Length: 82
Length: 147
Picture 1 (spheres, chains in turn yellow, purple):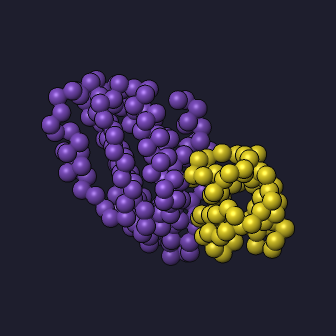
Picture 2 (tube, each protein chain N blue to C red):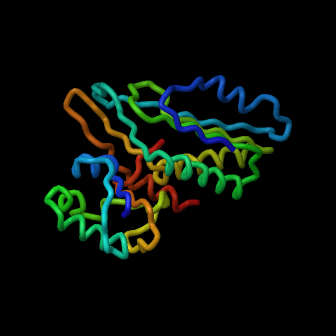
Picture 3 (spheres, rainbow over the protein chains, first blue to last red):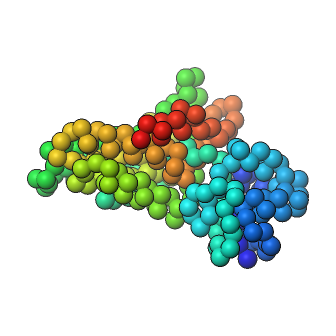
């Protein structure tokens, strides 16, 4: 089981901030494909992944990152701090 | 090095004073403060600042550690707020202390450039017309290449 977190408009589009996902995905990209296949709201949120960023266990990474041993994956738009 | 991520506001003068006083190892302190800017039409009602608890603190600490490595800094401070903010409210501040001003100015710029696009914060603006997520600017991402 992996905790999957969503922030900002990704959270709004999917309709929840966090869920536990049982997945056989070996990379973030595969996890995204699994989620997109679930329901239209996921497909809409992940339609253009170039508009998204991903963190694995709270470290920014890319969609090719492996999921072995990972506890937490977060999806969000580019950050706007400051 | 200090990082504080908090909902409540902070006392800018007291923070800079506390950061500055009592040190004799630094000849220069630079501080930067971000405040909520109203829209050109003046119709901003509020801004909601969302963040990723846990990752936010770690990302900011990482950015501070990188600044301490690159410049001759004696100390640095980042305070960043989240939650509901209104026009004119303080959003965040950074401060740097170094023996000479060049390092303090440059490191403060670096901290700002990095935390704008590498710390997990997202702004949503609520105006009388509705609500909209603030889009990241290409120039903020481009700013990182100079470091």
